[in-house]
Image (cartoon, rainbow, N blue to C red; front, side, top):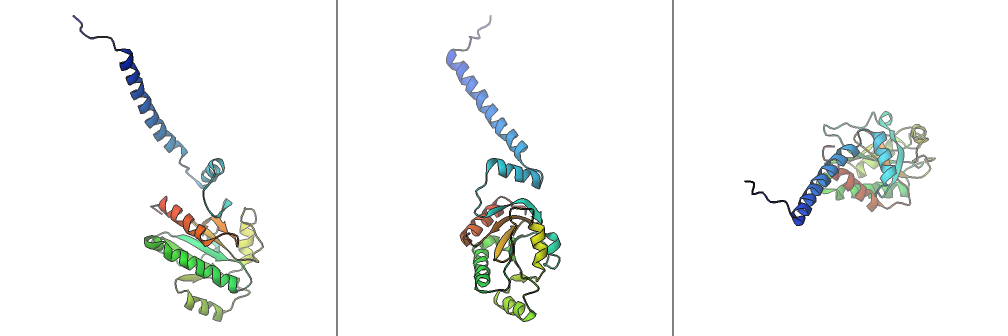
Length: 205
């Protein structure tokens, strides 16, 4: 004799709810795996599609600047880079930018060691004495004089292109890809917010 009673309408509705919740959970997990970008091109497409909350301006497409940085010290731990460049000499604006980025670096707290600051003055407008003076004032800043025209060429086909007459700073990934840039119109607090966000979501970098 079969004592099993047919499910009531309420029981069937409850079962449907359980299956719906299971489907939603697995759907979210699957979407997460499918949406994770595997390369820089996919990351840029995703940012274009969904937008971005960064404070700086997006470098689109991202630009590989590794060829400009052969003299930058390489640490055992991959680091994000705040790259300062532009202007004809380290004038008052340049000094202000260097101080701003120094303060931002310090405010990163325990994440300070995951970021380095690099200043690329134009080799045609800076002398050895100026470099020594700057290095004394900013002992943890790497100073690498370059021909800034090379950087101008590298950025020429990206959204970060400019004539190098004004100071700017960029954020580079540990792979030396320029992904964000900041002009005189940006506030240093935006740089801090962006670095915190990048470091938070890249714990292995």
